[in-house]
Length: 185
Image (cartoon, rainbow, N blue to C red; front, side, top):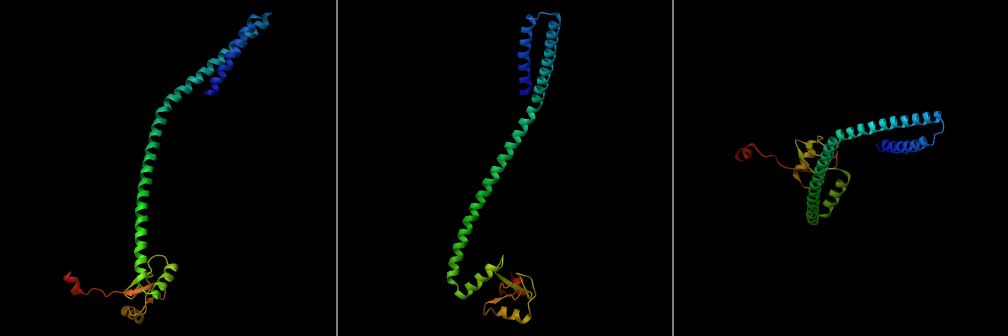
């Protein structure tokens, strides 16, 4: 649109110069040529003004769409900001919980015997997830591999620290509740 406006200004300037030359023409040919140039400039200006009006119409048609899209973008931005704030609050809460859990872990670790802590730290550094897992139905619940019956009996006694031969997690055993205990509950 600016380009069309610039062209219209240039045409207006050329038209003014052509009118000035019209008064100084000495021959009929020069006069007719200047009139022809004036007609051409007027026709070109008319085309340019038509294009400007068409662009203004298009602008009027697209303006509501642009405003609607702006509103949608603002709504999305607000929703994203709410989501970011919510996630930040959640993160801050989790960070606080992590700090509390780490403090409890350190307090409990201070009460546990040193060899057990060293074994725990070793497995924790090598395995993601749980470090201490239960033995159930003669399987390690960390790697879900079957364990030999004699090995399960050793774990069942809980007399010493026992690692799974497959995943090296620390194992413990809990006696399953009997049918009588389950009926009483």
